[in-house]
Image 1 (cartoon, helix red, strand yellow):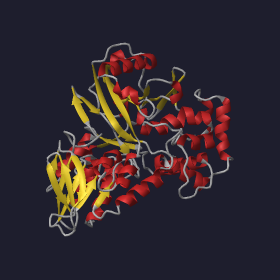
Image 2: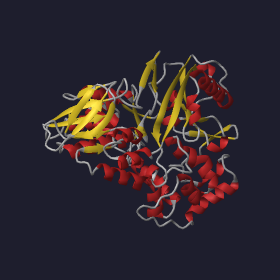
Image 3: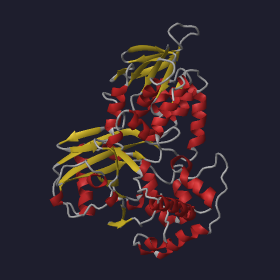
Image 4: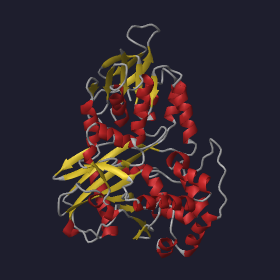
Length: 471
């Protein structure tokens, strides 16, 4: 029987443990998590009838891995999409909220009239966006890359990049679109340029496919999925479905080293705060900056490669109000803040408008984002200061002058991966280096792929390398 130690109790580690229990070869699995609870950034709190997702609140529906896992652990009936009546986004520009033009896909216009009618862009910017139809496509080689900001500006112009695509696409990573890799973060745009020669033509083709499905009786599904009781339910249910794995929280891994060849205890020793663990395979389902000190003695070069991977810190502030006290209709999923606005916040989600089941009747819930690349100093402020800043921003932009019924602050230090230009070849080299150590596996959010589905996928792929999985 193989002995497997999984370091990290986030969704990647849990997905790996879950998949190993479906393997053809039975494994003895021990999972250790340094924190007091499982789930990593996936944290759901229930308070006075509110459901609060402190970190990610959903996953991309088009990537099937998280949805399939949710169904496997009995959450199929709990899956929900965003509310269809509020699937719009506001952009903050010069102290006003402007609706993002309708028909945009990944920040790319698919129709002329909504773009012309929009007050967010001037005529010169609208005309420049139209030149996407004639701008020659770039010829991409395997390891070529470009920042999101540069890519969108090249195709659609600087104003669209700054006011729409930058905050929309860069905001997902709490990062600077001027340094984030388009190939790592939004590969769909690279594919669109390569296959259609124009982003506008590509997104129009995608829109027509969606219309055809609607005409065939298939309703337009939500692009994002969550769970009625919050994404934390995925963590709870996967953990509860583990039959044989031994799971320990508040047990930090300190060091990983190789055992002498032929040692009956296995190939690896993992030093932890609760004593040593021995294994044939070790899964490091933690961020690269956590891997770096663990493998420092084992492989200084791998440690150095991991230490170079960048992560940003962020904080979320939740504010609850009586609906009667909010003048704004909150008729969207929220608003985004371009970096050029120089505000202390990145965005605000209208949680109770985006999702059902998140707030009691007659109440609204907002989530304000702080920090991210270039603004990480905000995360160091105390709770009272962050709440004060959040209230000042919703007063200025939403005209909410009443005190909230409650406020909650959550911090995520060095937890948002920053896939900078050149990220994919760097990660391939890092993972290839890790693969030179038989039985050592590295993966999770921010390596190759970001978000819950990619984290689940990597955990399952690691499990399949350890033991073939039953289909």
